[in-house]
Structures are given as structure tokens and as C-alpha cells.
Image: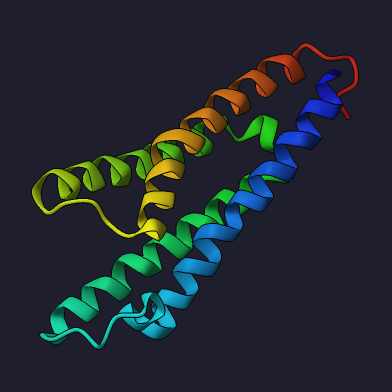
Length: 138
């Protein structure tokens, strides 16, 4: 695969992956835990914290989306954002051990955080290396 085609493929995959934090984070900010089918949280501090973390998740989606147009040149930002997501996934491991297995939606998040995101980080690094040596660069 040429560097240009691989770059386009990565851009497409990352753009699609960005939909998860944008949609889930946005819906969670607007609807709180009700988005997940849970009743309102009491005490209200837990609802506030849920929406705060959801806002951060949404912002991470926006930040990842900002990497897409020049993904080959956004390695430092991409790695920082990826590290934040992996740290969240590791926090889910703590919950899994302490409380038990979460719902399927959270298991999907777990797979994205500790599986897909590290793979995307490696792919972005590969594209950046290949693109920097490619005569096809704009």
C-alpha cells in the first residue's frame, strides 16, 4: 500500500473512531447516566462527576478529530490523547477487579481503550515514518 493510501485509510478509521467519544460523550453530558438506561444518580455529586468526565471524553473526541486532516504530522498530540484513553482503560481494570464485569457497552469501551487505541497509535507512527520519506507528500 502506498503511503498516501495508507494515510487516507488511517484518516478514515480515526474519523470513524472519533464518533464514539463524540456521540457517547455528548449524549452522556446531555442526559447523564440516563443515557445508559440508569435512573438519576443520587447524590447529585455523582451525576455531576459523571457529566464532568463525559465532557472530558467528548473533548478528547474533538481533539482526536483535530488530528485527522494532517494525521501524519500530529504524532505528539495523537500519542498524548492515546495515553489519556489507555489510562482510562487501565482505570476500568481497577473497576473490573474491585466491582466486577461491567455491561457490554463498557466492555466495548474497554476493548477500544486497551486494544484499538494502542493499535491506532502504532499505525499513526508508521504512517508518519512512511509519509516523511515519501515523494508523494503535498
